[in-house]
Image (tube, rainbow, N blue to C red; front, side, top):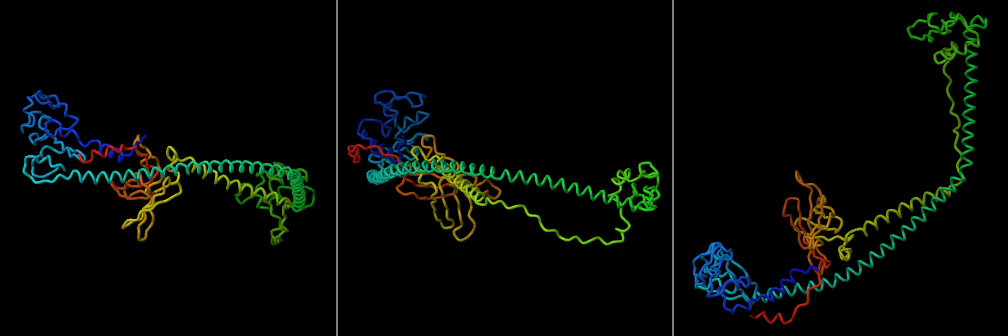
Length: 467
């Protein structure tokens, strides 16, 4: 189980007050290395490079390459000095700061031989830090209680949404079955009418073809009589020569060798049928050339019969629209339910919510699981700083960081993106925003959803505070 650092710090701080300070050990060595410093025994450098007599430890001369023989002096440039800081947090400082006249340790132990006047502030610092850590622990505790409520509400909300989705899917399925049944009835009712219409159209097309054929025969007979100028019952080449529009090669002259009569000198009415097929598209009657074209009179529009099943059509149309509406809602619910809201869905309450932070120049808007944006405070268009990508925290606490990607592109740069760091708090607010790198934004966001149950503290631990 992940435990907030603030709680760990409070426990460690209370335990590590260096109660061993009064025990016999080399000046300012750390508890973890104290076992290597035993008086009256040779000292081996912590890096194992050499062994020296113990009286050369803290003799203000650097014998070990790692500086471990001088934990309490400034003799070694790479050495470190341990500030015990009883009542506060212990710390390490570079050995070069020992006895330099400036108090770096709150317990003043780094200036033991410089004559500097320092005050031991460890207890006051420790008190303030303990108060701060205790306050943060209380916030974590209250936030964790709120988190339990969020988990309970999220579970109930997701169950309700799942039930609603199943209900809508059932309604949608029933509506689809109803539409299919109506379509079947409609098609069955329309089938006789459709077949009758097809028969009518077929008969009408046959009738029109017959009429066209009769008209063509009448026209052919009319042309035959017009071409048969001597009325002998035959059409000769000479009689065709009077119609230059019948010139097959369009050279402006009509010769006997161009074969309009199929090589014959003359044709009767039977043989003329073949000739007529070749010349009827070009033939111009002499009377037609002298008579203006008749003006066509508009004919009455033939309308298709209107079906009397308007109610069925309306029902089908409205039902199809309702199915599309149900489908849209179902997909919206499926999308909402499918999000990763954390191990116990504690982040579900953030869905469809937005939180703003106003700065001197911009209004930043965070809509969890959706997008992040930035808008100038005094007019201007909104800029996308990224859309929801994924949880991006460390492996031990992946739900501590949100990543938003593929925002508006920067001028001659990458698309904007935002990292949102989540911290424990009783409120849900955006606390800060910055741009640590060009086009890469960082937001601090507090929410009770990341609060963890604080460990139980032993009341007796506070007895060490005054050591």
